[in-house]
Figure 1: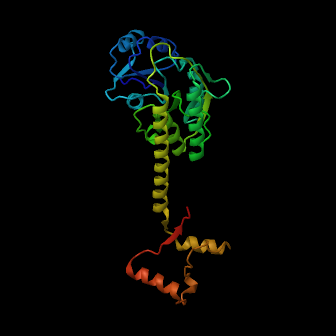
Figure 2: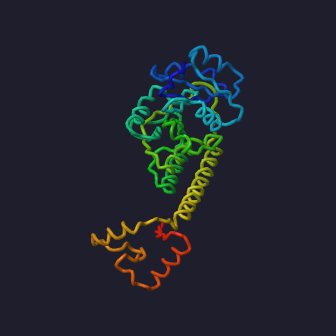
Figure 3: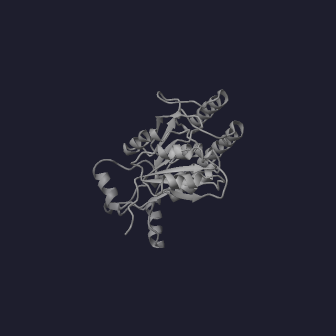
Length: 301
């Protein structure tokens, strides 16, 4: 018998988080149907504790380093209609998950937590991290026409059916920004909800403000170039779009007084059979050669 797919999948990347994973798992709401722990080959008891507290946990062993690699592996293993990202260090509170799921059920495609919205905040922000995050969010909004208040924050949720459209390639912390910007490029409906970032409960963070900020900036510029490349490809492909226009359709429009569309060639009608001008001769040559007479619509992108 096939097991019914869960509605909600929670993805938790973890590396040596034995002191924190228990608190995170204990606060996940009971209505979450699937928890995917992506373990980056921890040398402590992270996996053992997770299995003890949640016997139904799905464990993915991630051999490639980096948070981005771990999240992508978790996304591939998820079966839920909605996918939620949580940090294993306790900095993202599972109790806030209802806000994200409610937004998805209300029609959003991608939901991002914001520490700058009313009701949000952070107990872990340094002046350097806060200033850098605001600067990167402002730059992203200028480049992509978005309206993010918080860019580099990993509490996100999205509809799994849009995973392919997100085109994820990042391997490190910059995946949080890649998710948001690719959601903009894909034309998804994006919403922000307030979130309060807690302090890591134990251990030392792998986040490095300067290093990871530089990677975020590089990824942002690469996404901008890729967006321009895709737009140019679409424009080139659509520049001359052949449209088969039936003579009956053309005659109906003339009978209704609408006249020819701008740029449309005049087509000879049955009552105009004696017309032998250049347009008629070109149509006759096409008919003799076996090619249909096409009207090309030039799209000015």
